[in-house]
Length: 190
Image (cartoon, rainbow, N blue to C red):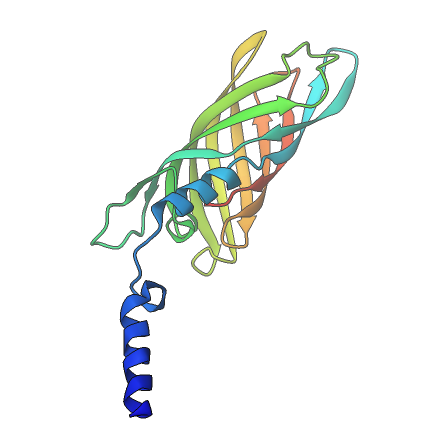
């Protein structure tokens, strides 16, 4: 008799406890809330502040927003395009993406006379360098920068990424004499 009570209790427990199912329903609120909070972490970068006679480096923070990513190696059963929440495998295995980078300089631009706040937007190609790109990938792209009083100005961007394309180093060559080079660490949780 006690044997059947134990079996009944175990079966009842298994049928009523939804946390034990492997195909448990996705908790979208937790997924999008945690993703949104992780997007608030900025990437640090160094920016040149120069005029005709003097030059120095400014430290700043840059946020990485990728609204559209189109993968070259997407599964034939899914769309190659993803919006905002990008699967890292689809990014580092070969893709083209549109990006927006809000920027904030910690100190003012003493020589260039730029505003502390700016935004840039552009397109970059991300391609695998080692393996399928999970260990090492690189990017090349172009962007337009909006930072008063000289706005807009154009840039060429090169990057190298590791750890599933979540950490990397980016170099920007700006086509303006007051701010020729920017170097930054790329941090992005997808």
